[in-house]
Image: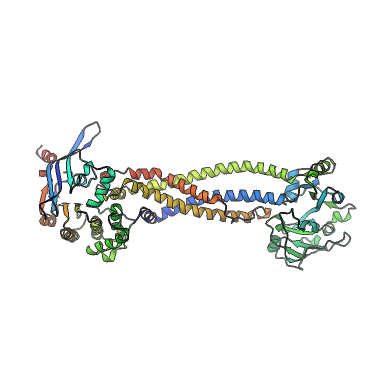
Length: 395
Length: 234
């Protein structure tokens, strides 16, 4: 028999109350862990998605809307720019890579993204790599002969059930321009997983208005300059132009993170309140257990238990509860992050909700410490139990 | 029974402070000696100071004045931690209402007392507890929780717990008062037999005829406790 054995026996002796207390701790810890994981994953997702290109060029308007719609597909598309702007940028000696982007409608909620095969090309500076899970990339077809081939993002393929060679369209008006699945991408853990990629000629061919336009439309152009020193001049020139704006995604990220910081502050406050409520619950549960147990505590003292032993038993109970709740909470936190990832998966921002972080052992240690502290007052109450008074026969 | 005294009390008084500064004296005894290995029964009306006397001998309560020796120890002069240790090693306590820990099984309740004394190696504790319970006829009940035991069985577990550390002195506060007559006789017979066999010094608070008949000495609190005697003559 040890102090811990007695503590564990006591916990088992009031299994329902112990389980509820451990569950309340686990819920509180789950919230904290899930919030931290999601906030971190979302931030990393934003950074990963936005840092491959240094400049996003689009129509004048909201810079945040341009980046959110083009890079993360999280907002409405900005108005179109002319395709010639892309051509000019492609010829610009300061530009290493220019990628055209045309945002279209959607098929079963999965957005059409028109681009060139350059979008998928591997480069030393690219964080994201595209690998085919099946089929091939769509053909770089001439403008006059669109092939209407598409490349499905991993999630788009999984959700729609489309296979290589399948033909599909949405709405009767599009029956004339059915698309054919040429390839399926492997997961990239980004917004691209939910995209349906196609060539620009196919994109223009599908669109009645675009078909009639002499100068074809685009939503945006992604730019990677040859030298970072060229970035300011490109940025300035494209912003001075009447039709275009050039946005530094890193600047927009800063705006997004600043907005997130406010939400994080509120979240932190809510989590602190949740933490206090959980600690109060532990306190009340242990206080009531100790009060109910005064006679047994007095008996142990009469049998020779030292006050420190009694204190140790109550604190060990709290530590054991906090331990179980803490571990359950960390596992639960990952599960909540996984569920949240499923819910906000369209953003492609949460990449790996099961990644264990260095903060988690610290969270567990903190939970055990705070849980034990919550039991300190009941433990002192037990420590101070008057033996003779509490041994009197029950009437 | 030896002629050596296992317990000696001299001029022991105990008073409890009341509101308003006055004291309520509950115990005032001139002298009490319990020979080692003897069985002494204390009897007296409710409130006559029997439990207070037991608590003082066990070191659970401290006397207001007077000297106490239990074996070679004066529990009054010990620090609280040493007094706890003394109680665990030198005194076995049996309560009227058994006071078993509900979360622990019979064998664990007995082992609990060993945990506080730390006199028996941990690896031997379970087998010793099982042996004690078997001696008291509970070999089949080791894993049962108190709620799964009859009242007589619970009291036998409490007796085994009191004997767990082989203390020379056993104090029992009306151990059969909450048992029916036949169970009380059965439990008392086992209790007295085990104490005799192991040559324990037993101080038993009881009004049971069987206990009074088996005792080496019967002490009436009305005679022992001068406070009680004064109340009687008042």
